[in-house]
Image 1 (tube, rainbow, N blue to C red):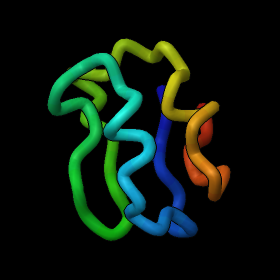
Image 2: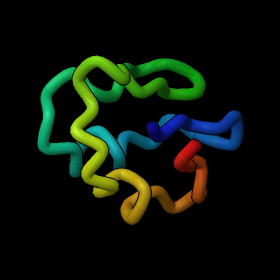
Image 3: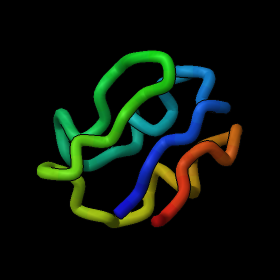
Length: 55
């Protein structure tokens, strides 16, 4: 499972690269909808803040 940490600056890079619509919810910080997330890791690689971590 991936989570988004407080250092997320809500830039939207993760939402743009995510292959699943609705898996990443807007906010400050963004959140990952674990029911929809495919755990592909694309968002982890894209995040410039290194705010997305696997738990």
